[in-house]
Image 1 (cartoon, helix red, strand yellow):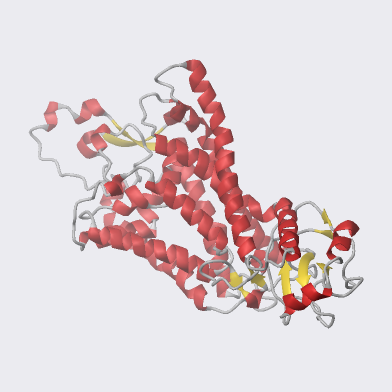
Image 2 (cartoon, one colour; image 1 turned 180 degrees about the vertical axis):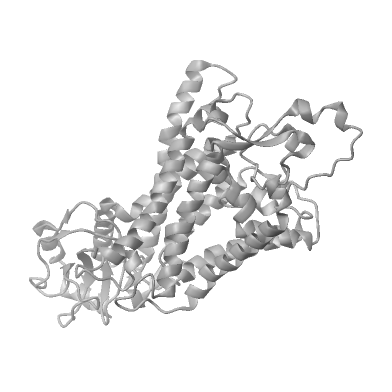
Length: 488
């Protein structure tokens, strides 16, 4: 009831959040790279990235796990904008194809994977592309469909499926007393209808997953009340609705693709796999996948930060995030499937048993996003030390890499290799590609001098990786004729 009484104040807060959100997304995209020695408190670009990825999104996850989808109903800028557009739009009916329950899962996977390919956490231009595009889509959908509704939030939002699952764990929810709602005493009383923006059937609501917690229906017919509950009650409540789309989103989306998206930057196996594939391609004079000419909106391409993806980088990241996510989801699904087969209880299908993993999913997402917070703080207080491992095709007169860091390089064409070819222990902070002037260089990791031109790119170290003499000797077998073709 309090939310309904202070409706104007809430509207004002919502538009303040919209302005703040647009400022964090748009302005940093037009700012230059932070200079050396820049800090969060004196550089707007660093502050915006820390505020958005290091504070905003982890806070949203905590709010969802504790208060439900109050973020969606009260503070989400896309929800505010799509509802505003819907009040002034065409008001067309929602088509059947748009109501497909699988859209949130598809949108979440596509957004997550694409964000990794363009480095959405590190570069404001990539964030503007993804988040700005999502906001434009939300406004467009709101303008075309519905009248004063949040069609985008209900059916298409990439985060909707995630929030719906995490909402089941929250200790607060809006409880509907069906007997009070149907009381005949209300039949003779004029009752103002509630505009439920996400199109929830309030009278029949048994699950809080689709409720956005906006409070507009609080006190309606004296049957809807904000009430506490034991965390996870909805998961074990046999009356609550659980869909296959929710189970798939939990297994293959949150615990699958999201986990691999957070983890791939610290996986040393990817470095080793790339070394092997790059070596195999060079031996066969095949350099198409080693090119770094992809535009920034397709693959990460920021030469000024020594951060460039080759086509091989993109292919391996795509394969790891999607393939690893699907594999992890399939493994996790074996437990619920096996339990459902043993129980043989129609009230406990595998979809409902899968919801037991919802608390784990919430913790997983929060910890993954918290890595961004720690990375920013580490960049401010704890200089990162990394060692570059390069696969280079360079001339005898090639100079040191522009970053000035030591490289354990596989170099052609000089007999005996270069002085940098040694056994080094590397802590790859981030698997990247960079280029050096006048050469082809495929750098897997950056810097060991304690400084990174983009401090937020520093990541926790992974286990040490040793470049063996055997691998180095193998590279020396490349002929001078092959190197001449590389340089040309």
